[in-house]
Image (cartoon, rainbow, N blue to C red; front, side, top):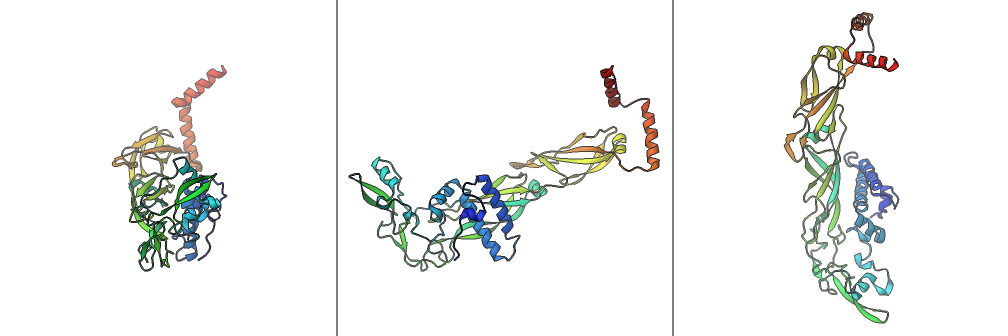
Length: 379
């Protein structure tokens, strides 16, 4: 098995990188190595797994702290180096000073009454891209992501032959009591059993696939139903699709972040759909019926005579459904923009000049008001 790379190196960030920098680096790498972009590419698949594993740790403040302090032993159940959390003392003959001082002052860590009690698995995250329409009306999409599953070869036991024995040193408690002499005093402390690494059980013949951990990291593909009305950057939860639990505990959840692609015509403002529609000078002046795009196809809009550029028309019930109540729906706001022609024939120019001459004797209300104000200003 290839040697594991440092998680910061995997994402290409410094050790003091901010949470936002880590998230940005992960998105870039995940898109680069995503299985959909690299079909049948085993190297890219491994890179994708490696990136997901690194982000899962560095995006979690508690896990990142453990990783910075203890390395892979502190965060990855698949890491087979050392004897687990029992090797974290680092203070020579004194063992874990935190436990010693905790016992001396009557506090310290609370011991686990049953190391084999069911433990719920952790939640994991994934990101999915959808179109504007898919976000508005909802859809089904397949999402690929990394999660920890029970090993299929040993059914999560960690044993190749299914034989799991109670630890003879801690008698299944996962902890041992030790005595330490400190400043002339004898104090008792509780530590993780070094023989079973706190699990309370010992595996004589470890599984070759999971190396006795009972868990493996795999890419899972899941078809999810994206809720109608979800907005860009919002997340929703798929229960039970996260990391597998321990000792029969339930699996964690999958948190899916939705990224909505920009639309050619539409923008979104809450539950409202916004769009701009160009009309000609003649249509604005004389009035017309025009076809405007909506999420559900073309809509015939009546443009009244004398419509000015920037006027907004509201189409009730043509907007985005409420993500909490799809029976409620926003409106669509259509802003018309009067387009001035740039290339005119000689005949068209002559007609416009005659039209302009006909207006000179009686200017339009806004023009007349503007020039009257200018005249008053200089007078």
